[in-house]
Image (cartoon, rainbow, N blue to C red; front, side, top):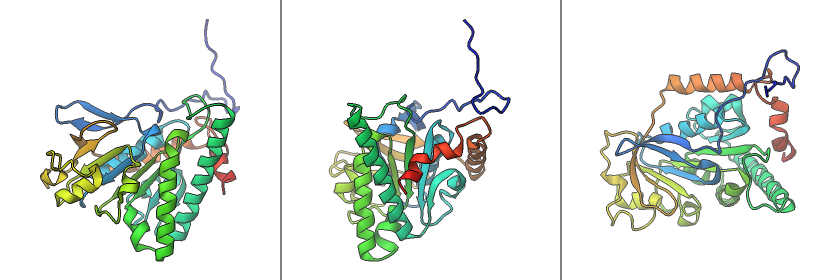
Length: 292
């Protein structure tokens, strides 16, 4: 029996959807044996930290690129310095720069969406979102958490941001709203255990001290020989990756040049336009708009 391709938008062209999904394992690099390393991001949160130049930005942009090219997936980006996640600005449902008031407002909206999704799950006798439920994956990427939690705004605003972020990280994983957060400052006041332990995946790039490595991976790992302070400063992209129920392992994160990132972002922007290739933007953002 032959399959007839339909043209739901009446464009005269057969829509061609992207072949990627956030429900599939996300490739992030290779391990010390040259084997591919993938993460099940849609149901897990990822914490990335380490000193400047260690390779954090590469992993952040790999995640953003994967989300941008995946079907039925939306991005929400927080970037106080604007340029790290700037390439994804045109395809993000929300792009937050150095504005703590806006950051708090966006987090509140995300929490509203998450709560609405849990009400839907409860009504449908479900415990988590599935691939074929029709709900979009909403990936929140925060570059340099410390800017929002300790630098911008007032102390009261910083505390509210941190509280809302913990709430989103707590709620997001089962309703298709994972969070990826990154920080250059690896100290207990920036990444307290109450926040760190909510991240099922943690990736520690080069750190200056064993204590800083333990802030990311968890207390005690450095004593067992898993310390990101041992990573050669010249070996950019090298890191220790800790996944749920495992032990840290050495990996090398894949690298995207600036040209690569902007080329992928431009292609994703074209692919997501309401031209018959993807779902119209008005449909794609409806759930987000209702939370405003």
